[in-house]
Image 1: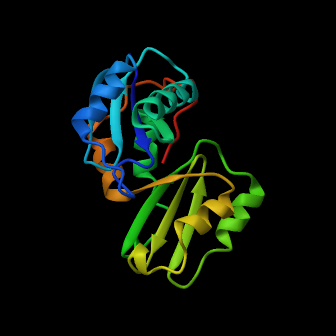
Image 2 (image 1 turned 90 degrees about the horizontal axis):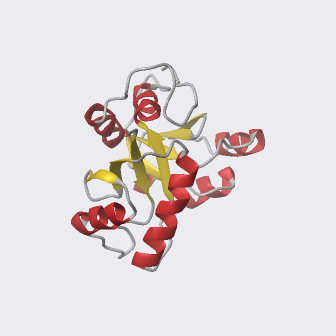
Length: 190
């Protein structure tokens, strides 16, 4: 069965606390196998027989909303997709803070232009496929750019992770061999 990594938005932020043991139980109840969580920021890995990540995202979102009583947007990547994201290095200097934002769909050209207009002397952005990279020369909390401004520019919600978390997840869940990801999309090369 293919292994997926899910990035869950709104888990353990804003006063919404979900114990990782409970999250594993909820995901297992959704008929996902070999569920594991990684740090308490809404990262989970599991196996599922489905080969359509979008269907899995919707199933997890419905199940978590029913159990937790609030919306938990879910962004799934195959292990091959995650390895490509972790290996991609769009900036020569990673700055003080480098984060990856996960999206459900590739943003339109107008949205990409809107994000690039947010570039400042301390903030730089790079978009590729269903991810974007945000490099800050300060802590994100000190940036004049906010997550809300980014989502407005993108025209869609996102969830972000520090690049170190992404790389650690990619190292832990190495991709299956083969030229294509389980979703049927060709794997990206870095």
